[in-house]
Length: 391
Image 1: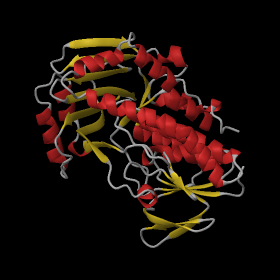
Image 2: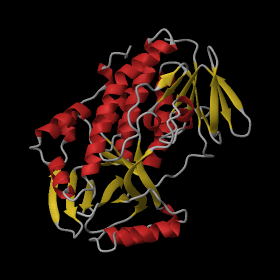
Image 3: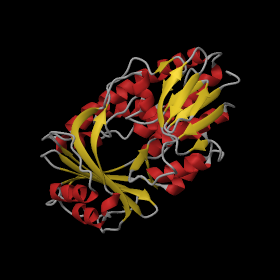
Image 4: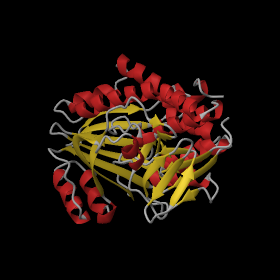
């Protein structure tokens, strides 16, 4: 193990918090710097897949059982036309195949659970990083308001618009994927929404609407549509009006759940990604999660890849004799896998909004699709205990 080593993590989201837990387990001195003033309620749900849950269990044994109680284990996925006509309904059998469920959960609830696993003095809120400077054996962080912090290693876990990435790589804004999304979470009941289910409605004109049980009586909905530009409204009322207009003639409960959602709870965002990089580190600075490899949400792997990153980065640092060797091992392990997931996400995301989206989405659900099965086996069978840099 590299001792003593002070590590600063920029970003108190789920990737940054999981990384802090993993590093503390290996005995490192860790601080997390988050720009928000407190843990924030984010109007998003996410799916934790077996590969991500395997990583979390290594990072913090026992946490998966806590998450299962907080979320909803998916047992049925239903695909429908925008008219409400059923196309397919498949049981989800990943528990039997991979030993872990498809677990749907609120983003903010997951963040709370991860934060509760850390000592209270680890997370520093109200710290907006504006840049850094590297010296021979240290990194100086600069925060708005003039505060500076010196550290041995800086981890950028600050998302797709990462400040750390811009200072390290300088590759500009994310790539717009040609689609705009709206999303929210609320407590909502409807006769067509059963517990432990997800329902995806699709149309041939480049629109999809997803409804997911995320546990605790909450439903996550996400609407998305092809759009020539990445324009989003600054006023919440305009965003709600826009999504209502786009899905006005769709089968219920699409319209009902949008209308029931408080206006200021709806998040309107362009869907973006970034092409794979050849490296994520330089000197004493390294990227992780969406700061390193953001993908479109077609496979639901953003958070799961971040948990894989967290587990492997901590293990590589614990096993290596110096930072350079550790970060090289981390990149060698993670770059090939994340590039495959990026490519698959990009292709399936694009196809899911074309005129044959009904066929594409149905094929993705079909057990007879060997290529899809092989990919899912490779994806979900991942376990960090088998990785080379685990000590």
